[in-house]
Image (cartoon, rainbow, N blue to C red; front, side, top):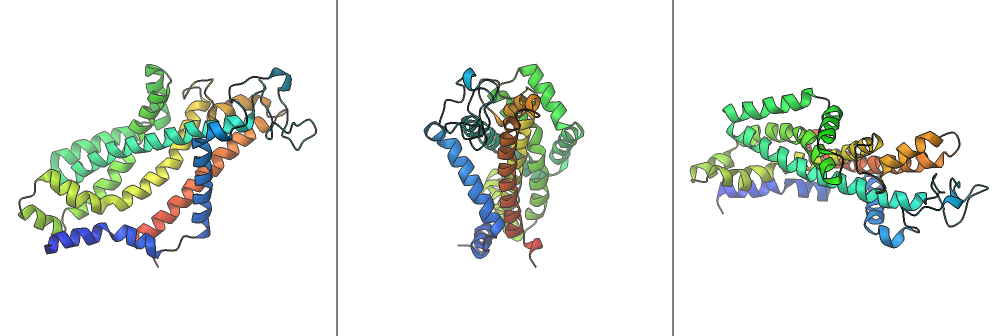
Length: 296
């Protein structure tokens, strides 16, 4: 193996090696545990949810959690204004929030990383065009842009994912571009170029593996943002439409009953808070572990 290829392989393996040496903190373990529980509940929702989330039982409407006076054991977290089981709706709502978040992060990463690689590696006019487009997206408030696109295309699961991805690709593009500007000047890239490697091979074989560290960190932190983003769109009536349960819709339904039925908005809010907190804690640990500049 040549010296340039060896340097590439060693650099690409730095992130996993640092992860192996760095012992997870309590916060990271807590975040990972909560995220695994939420993800497992979402995946196994048909098996673990006690009720059909869309089933209406008007005779049981607005029942409090099981530990309160009028609570029912078969509805541990109570029921909503249509008698639907809150626990079942939270479990099924997690499928939408986590599924949409992961899909949107994946799509935005594909767009942003591709444009960031091209802008940072080629520079010149390509870099100028990509960065000016990024500046335009940054100048428009993302929630207003999302509202405009959803109003034009109509609210649906696919449109929500597309809107979220299109409005957040800039975060990946800017981070990757900045990293690639440094990587392209390294000796192993110059050596690979001298051996006749084409631009596409240089990007995929030598540059991209060495830019994975910031991509992983940004993707983790963006997942937390995407969960809040989807909940905000659903709260405004621009997300996935009823009768599909989402945490944002549950918050919107419960806001009119805050004084009389606190559990309608409290438990979906707690689900959002815990999930976002777990992702942020895990993302902070990944950032501290993978970024050597933050090591003491």
